[in-house]
Image 1 (spheres, rainbow, N blue to C red):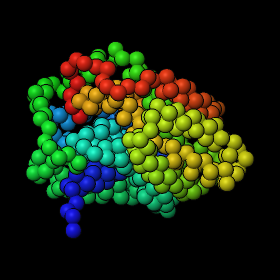
Image 2 (image 1 turned 90 degrees about the horizontal axis):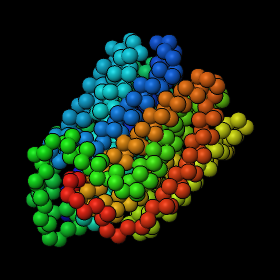
Image 3 (image 1 turned 180 degrees about the vertical axis):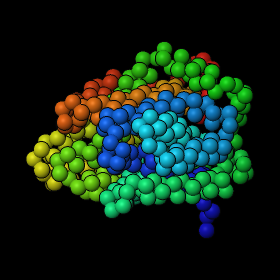
Image 4 (image 1 turned 30 degrees about the vertical axis):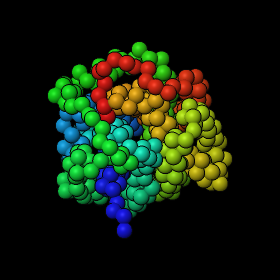
Length: 424
């Protein structure tokens, strides 16, 4: 029997690590109401804590990419997972809203950054020569798979007991993944005496940058990329991507459903089903990104997402469970299908050796959009006592993003010729 290449074991460990970090971030939606009820905190303040978390883990992405080059994959994964565990433990003792902002906004934001930003392209580029698009698709899909498995369970625990046992369950999962990373994770294929999957002859790699300051590396990458128009088009479209996904749907969808009389567990289950279809859609998107024009893939992804978001308020206003189910399936397939084509375009334009830092900055824009929607959604609810305008405007912005990506010129080689962005 043919031996399984160790790259697939690394992919599996990374997959479940991302799932665990994704569980932490996606669980914010089911904690809004319990925190509001127990502590009496204003919903916009709770939303602000989650917004800070989304923005911080996004803006940290380029620096995480640089630190990966300096510290290595395994050590960075251990530090990040331990930071998440610390944040969960501190949640048990918080009793002031400013503590929520520090714990969920800063500690958990930093802890989740590595897993939810640059680790997918890093693992794909270092452990895979062939099937990189598929690897990125699988790892990207894992960010929503946590919802598939756990959100209804967390909602049930909260409804029958309280939010504390739900936090305890997340802590157990984080601890298990920390042990697995300690025992089985490796930095590079060379550590286990193999080549990346699909590579038949070893490539010569430069290690010149490993001793440089990661902050300098990250900002050099930004300064170079900022000179290229396509960077701004990708960053602008990804800002809208974050605004219309984890910023709005991930944070406020459950509360939006509850405001129309949908039970907590039912609302969380709808979000969970989005995770099922996202797993399929994003994996398929990775496969498609190896075969078709990524600009057109993104054009259709954003356009169809915008149409579904405009439809959601209509479905809830009319109390149509059928339309809500259709939205769940349709939106789920599209949730983060945008990531594999965006990574692929970044690689085509900026080159394999330089795309990691550049994508880190593009993803920072994604999380800036998510933060705007997370806080803006809570503020909209406070002002109008409904989320309808927030969801409608997000749909309109998605249509704008589809225009951004279709104006990107197709590239077959790097536009950047200067040295200065690390290989990730």
